[in-house]
Image (cartoon, rainbow, N blue to C red):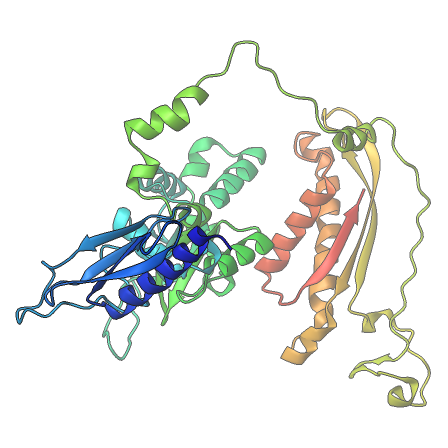
Length: 433
């Protein structure tokens, strides 16, 4: 080891001790006692002085600062705070966004801008759209101000929540009713209570949950508004933007400097801008419309051989000596197969279409006293009902109102009907055309 290395190591050791113990000795190094020989010289300080020693990373320099002014009234030096304590001026350690509590997100959101996200159940679609735009709201709790709720701490609450409505619900409702031939005035004057999600079907979060947990829930369910419930009261409505903006303060979101740095170079598209071609896998999917694949379809359904009306046996011994199960009604699974006549996208040519679907029910719902067959059978049954209703309307309204329904749209409509019927359960479903 070189003399300089030994000097630096000894210096670092003694300086650390002086810093931790608030020693009355300052550390100074030099070459004493001969050429090339290094040693440590200690220089005593006045009893009233105490030094702060600052280390600079990637540097051999040690900064010694006199803090004799930082003394207590009796003249003794003040000791530094404990290493694990953070002063008010020092920045807090940065926390992972996914670990932030939702209560902190709502607190910052409401501090920055407070808008009460509620609307009366008697309000019209026109009023709901106006409130969404003016309040910059993605969702609102629908309340009944005529009913009161009695609690132990609060005698009356005059805003009883009866449902939730979002901007996506309003757009979906308007598109559906305009497609059915209703005028714009009829659509705008309709009551939102007919289109809201009932309160017993609203998915909610809790203030002590984290951003990561709520993001996972919203992604799995495909929702963008999550009411936060605390002790039977809705504290606010959480959105994806609330979570993404949590670590951005007002200076980050606005200001001339940020606009010039982040936005000014991105404003405006040139006059020769065009759309890119769809990816290859999308082009192959679109090509099927012009070059369809023809299949021969057959249906066979059998339940688990050890299944009975009371449950399912884990083995032949557990099932019993009776014959193996063959009744399809015992199965949690369901299917449909329907051939209907619908108009093509142009609305002029009537074509025969074969729809098929299968739903795999979740048998573990039995543990909660729920029949797992109801959800899957209802889901597939509504798919078939929607197709027959659309086909029967072809001769009445023409192709405008009974054109071909995509499998995704068919499954979505069937799910909405199943949800409206308040059927509890779940399943993995596939619908094909």
